[in-house]
Image (tube, rainbow, N blue to C red):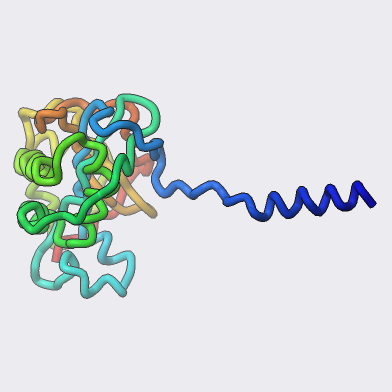
Length: 221
């Protein structure tokens, strides 16, 4: 009887113990002190692919027909040379209008702006305005290859071919400043590395590379 009672008490304890939270992003860190990172990763999302994934996104700003929207800023992420990248490093206040005016033309979604500040901006060690002006400065450094933005039909390129086009359009950048991300065999993002002064730098091996031989690239519409 005593052994059964002990077993029941142990089961009750296990049921009351909260489960460990799920991690939503590979290499997610453990919220270190703001500013504890090595460089930034500017993520440029290919909007036509994002829009094509789900018909319910048709009303999203980046999916408006006739706007010819290609790459938009997904985020500006503090990155480490190796190991887990920091996320959610502090309490995130609401992004004020002055900062929203800087970020919104590049990101197109107020909800995305707020999320990126909470998830990544709080790890930068900067105030909200300086973080988004740094993001805007980095984005202004990048020239998008005309071959990608002006294509009238689907393209099929290797990640290395995409990066070569970015290098050709940005000859002053280190040759290994670019990384291509893909999902389900299609171009997801181009990711570009910047130092803490918002100048281009080489990426480290911590930034993953698409492993597909070729990826599909739907045209901007």
